[in-house]
Length: 224
Ligand SMILES: O=C1O[C@H](COP(=O)(O)O)[C@@H](O)[C@H](O)[C@H]1O
Image 1: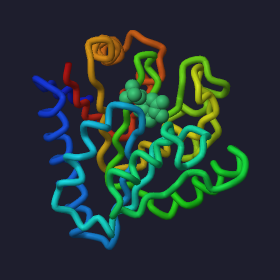
Image 2 (image 1 turned 90 degrees about the vertical axis):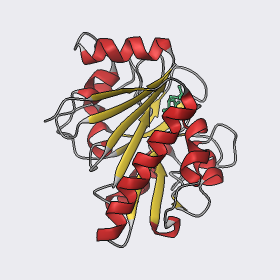
Image 3 (image 1 turned 45 degrees about the horizontal axis):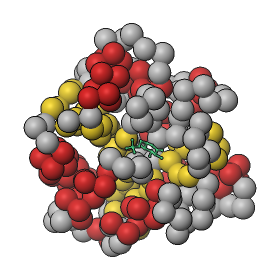
Image 4 (image 1 turned 180 degrees about the vertical axis):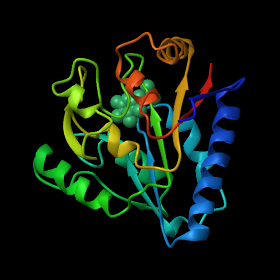
C-alpha cells in the first residue's frame, strides 16, 4: 500500500479550499459511474472551515449520502451533535442521523445496517483530537483494540469519550476504511507533532492505527 501523504498549507482557508475541491472531484468521479455516492465527514471544530467551501462545490447533492464518522449521544438538535452540524451545512445531501434507536447499542446496530447499503463509500474524511483520537475512538476506551483491528468486521459501536458528552457512537477502523478515498483534516502545531510521531511509527495512539491501516492510504491535510 502507498504511504500516507502529508499536505501542508499556509492557512486554514487554503487548506479547506483544496480539500473541498479534492472531495468534489472524488464525488463527481463516483457519480459519473454510479447512481449515488457515500460520504462520511467528521464533527467537532475542524470541519467548520471546510463545510462552506464544500457546500459551494458543483455537486449533485441529492445523489450524495452523507453521515458523520461518529456522533455524540445527545439530541439531534443539540449544539454538540455532529449530525446537526453536517445537516445544517449541507442540507441538500441525504444526511443520515446515527440515532437510529433508543439506546446506543440499538442505534449503532441500525446505523451499521444502513451504512452497509452504501458500501464502498466514495470518500471518508476524519478529524483528530489532540489526544490522538479519530472518529470517537479514544485512547484508553473500553474495547479500543478491537475497534482498531484492521481485520474486524466493519461496524458501528457505542463508544466512550473522556470528556462530555462522554457517550458516543463511532464507526470502527475497518468500516472507515471501506472507501476509495481516505483523508484526515488537522489544524495546529500540537496535532502536527502527533501526526509526525505517528508517521514515524512511534506512538500507541489510535491515529497510529489509522495511518497504518493496510487498506487505503491516508491523505493528510494540515494547516497551522
Ligand atoms: O469529538 C470529536 O473530536 C474529533 C476532533 O475534533 P476537533 O474539534 O479537534 O476537530 C472529531 O473528528 C470527531 O468527529 C468528534 O466527534
